Length: 105
Image (tube, rainbow, N blue to C red; front, side, top):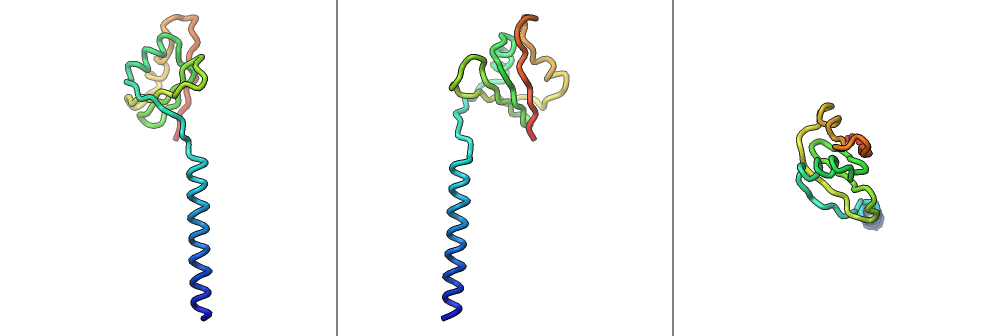
């Protein structure tokens, strides 16, 4: 009898922990829409000063367009970033605002 109660208690704890982890995963997972674009489109948007910020994670570049609140973020796969490539992500016009660039691990 004692063994079955312990087994029932252990099973209840496992189910409770699994349900809690599932709820955290569902509610904390980012579910922002992302529009897949080419790396050339990212470069064109930067040259036209339409990009507000760029987040780089490996070869994945995720960026938001300036002045488009609620619009989906854009995502492009490009080359491994080097310092020269990041510095090249500047608008064509000298008066255009350059995007903020963040590296994510």
